[in-house]
Length: 316
Image 1 (tube, rainbow, N blue to C red):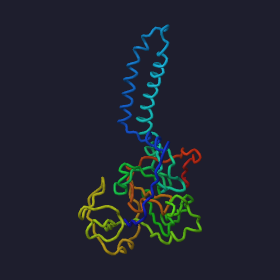
Image 2 (cartoon, rainbow, N blue to C red):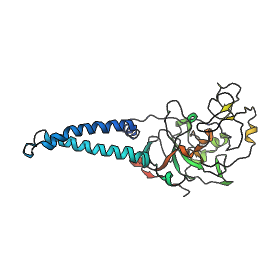
Image 3 (spheres, rainbow, N blue to C red):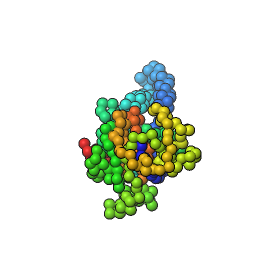
Image 4 (cartoon, rainbow, N blue to C red):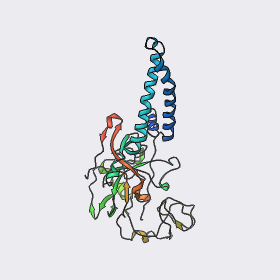
């Protein structure tokens, strides 16, 4: 693949209610089970007392214990339904930690993802998708992070980008959501279109190619020139996670890659790119995503309330 070097995202630090909501949304199932079991024990402990207390003695502390019992009952059902049924198979909320999707999504937004839709249909060109990124695309502080980008390549598509103009199967794509941001303020603020040209001139073109020739930017890998994939290869064999092992040929002339013709995206693979073109760590730099890594489709933002909106696909 002809993957080109780009800048990583600036991360902002959330606080207050944002942190609380995100932690609740990401609560591990193991903790939910412990929570439900603890409430069940409390409820069982209260049940006999509440049942056996005569009606004329149901005063004093009795109403308080009855409230605790009812609340425990409600929380048990909520934990089971929301965290064991709805979240794994239905919908889940996600926090946006970076400006890679500005101006569609902004840092500190919360979105709701539909995790059921791709069980009955395939991802579409233009969908905003939550997915598990390749291991080598993550930073040390985000080992289990989910990424969110726009799907701009589906199986069978021939995708190229020239001067930041996207071409799909040889035809230019009009992208109303595309943004070029101002790196001086952390890629948060979109630039007016009449100020895009200097950043367009700096950006290299992008295409996917069929080749066993790879390059790396990692200086710790001996004998590798400046290149494109930020990952340390072990020897001369690369085994992508869940993929086949194949040999690597190191080259000194990048034209050997750039001169190869573009190829179509293979079956079950997708290309994810951020709307913020000069502020997104995405598939242009680390390649395609397998369908099995897709978590769900972003449906709408719900926090902050002032930015609540549906995330429609402009192509469908």
